[in-house]
Structures are given as C-alpha cells and as structure tokens.
Image (tube, rainbow, N blue to C red):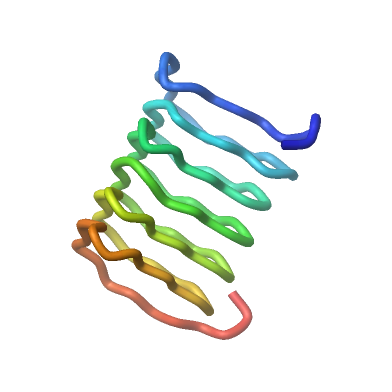
Length: 106
C-alpha cells in the first residue's frame, strides 16, 4: 500500500460519501457511496451503498451496486445488489443475490 492510499479499519462506523482519487481499503461499517481508483473491501467490511471504481475486490457484507472495469467477489463475501463491469470474477463460496451486466468500457 503506498502512502497515498486510504485505510479504514473495523473499529470505524461511517455514513456519507467517500471520494478518493487513489486506492482505498475498507474494513469498517459504512453507509453511503464510495468512489475511488481501486476499492478493496476486507472480511470485516459492512457496506450499504454504491461503489464506483476502476477495480473492486469484494469481501465482507455488501448491499448496493458495484460499477467497475473489473469486479472480483471473493469466497465468504455476502453481496446483494447490481454489478456493472467488463469483467466479473466470483469465487466459489460467495453468497450472491445479484443482477449482473457485463459492459465494455465501464
């Protein structure tokens, strides 16, 4: 992680909007929308909102929409919502309730 990346840990609860020009790692409870270059959601993350990024790696619990060129939903992730992406990777063991749309040039 470079010094320009942001890190929010599991002992934090936030509401609102996050806009980060670089990468962000979240392991917290967050209610709101996130825009960043790359978003990595850890196992402890609980997200209720929309995420827009170049790349999203999803763990934890997420309810909302994921929009990115590349989305990876990892084993153990509990995701409910929409995915709009050129590339979607879903590991075995993820729990999903989704509508997915692959779209070139997202």
